Amino acid sequence: RKEVEQDPGPFNVPEGATVAFNCTYSNSASQSFFWYRQDCRKEPKLLMSVYSSGNEDGRFTAQLNRASQYISLLIRDSKLSDSATYLCVAYNFNKFYFGSGTKLNVKP
Amino acid sequence: DTAVSQTPKYLVTQMGNDKSIKCEQNLGHDTMYWYKQDSKKFLKIMFSYNNKELIINETVPNRFSPKSPDKAHLNLHINSLELGDSAVYFCASSHPGQQETQYFGPGTRLLVL
Image (tube, rainbow over all chains, first blue to last red):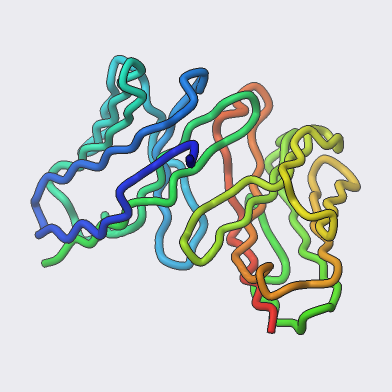
């Protein structure tokens, strides 16, 4: 079983839509969680950290549910430039475990 | 200014060859990593070094040997390349005291024929 599992998508949404991604992690001892964004043929870049209380950065909201071992990312008012693959990450004792990513296509 | 750089960007080689990929970071970070991203886009850690010392060595074939001459560099040497080694290899580094924030290099696309 993979440490972090995500729906690979793709999610095809129109501009302006709200879209949500979820992921689950298997190790309850995982200490920290993140969402990374990876554009086609580029390196992953940190989008935001995820806290139990939920956190927001502009149009992006991340949430962590430790009881269910579940992480979410909500994108409001999608832009064409949001098209990318979103990687869910769990950090545990010096190791980062990446999900295989959820692909988002935002269409005009 | 490039934060984490890798060379080469592309590498096409024959099975059985030996090749090296170099990584350098100018961020003053203590910890560096090598990841492999396969065709299914799954990013998996291979090695991690902290201040030139190996701290993570995942179940990677011993044909892969990392070397850290100083804390700004982490190179990856691969012996006897196999078809299954074809992937994108990413180097990353993280900030002292902020081990959880990683900065990735642009990747090296390795194709073994």
